[in-house]
Image (cartoon, rainbow, N blue to C red; front, top):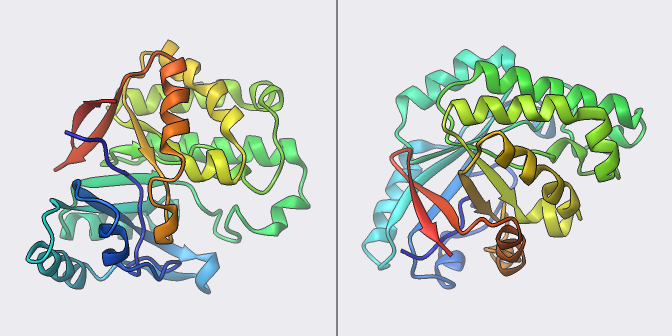
Length: 259
């Protein structure tokens, strides 16, 4: 089985206009999108952004009639503790193959907001990972922890700063996801567009030392041109860490693909 992108968005996500067909023109491999489930979203006037599941399934069924690809269903859950019951209700009502878990906002601001350029950097780092640690401990039902450094994208955090300020919390997060048999995502948008590749290079050995073996690779594409962006570079990085297999998901079950 070829490896295929495990983090992709279309117009079923609030922040994308991408069409399925534009992605499918690039691949005949299995195809999954991971649309945003973002409750109380600060980037959308605190609305609850929930993909229209019935329309989503109808679209996949229609594509199945026209394309040779295997079509899988995915969702990216934006964790927000006050809306946890609503998140679970949505997931319980709809069947997905792949659930990503993300930490996008604090109820007031999305962590990519320029507001965070004005706050103390150490305080931001420690607050973000305290939120993530509490969230991964509480949330059940995710397959993958997505872009572990999302909250740091708009600030310049060096590997030495991350290690000094948050290593025990990040190790705690990794211990939790390992215990829950979740994978760690390498997000190529974070690595090569937001220039955070050094942070991934830093934490991969922490994850491995705790026994972590499951990895996914996702472009986080919101436009078709970003599909499988810089996968060759990311695979080379993984090889340097002696990682030769990546996980893909069907009905929440990982299959390891050698690359």
